[in-house]
Image 1 (cartoon, rainbow, N blue to C red):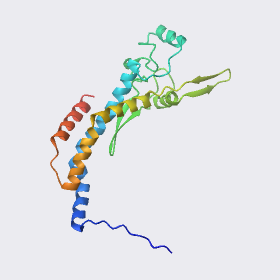
Image 2 (image 1 turned 120 degrees about the horizontal axis):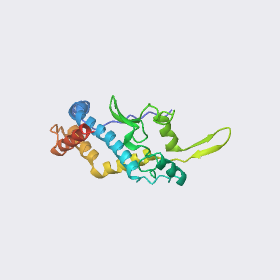
Image 3 (image 1 turned 30 degrees about the vertical axis):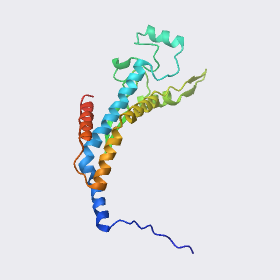
Image 4 (image 1 turned 90 degrees about the horizontal axis):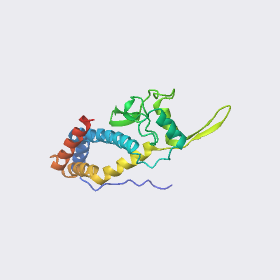
Length: 204
């Protein structure tokens, strides 16, 4: 029978206890900054989503000429923009579907349960239809709604912008320095980020 090998860490017991204590203290020291960052990300995603629909910059499948003409007759703004609809004019529009939910450990942007202003479908169900596409069969015909994944496009675009700003790297480095070296003083760079996060969250 093979013997079970036990991994031994070459770390003095007192030092290990000190490191573990610092790990437990991370939420107390950096918690507010991390929460502000998570809220900023949720707000940032929604802004990216709305701007993408308004500017028609996600490269979504184009609307048919007949659809554009119908939307023009209805008086919809920017009728050639897929999924834009009434834009910000209607509270329960596709454009305004997301809200920010506070979680136990952070924030999340989620489609609302409210019904779409011109449909019996709830916004979160309509979101699934447009993100992935849907084939609908009736007694008289079968028609296909093509996928227009605005949500995924917005998420990818926003996360790329976050990576370019190196915000997460700065916060992680500060946490690592505290855990490994006991540097409890929060660096100026992290304080500056915290101010930016809070301003962004309060403004939205």
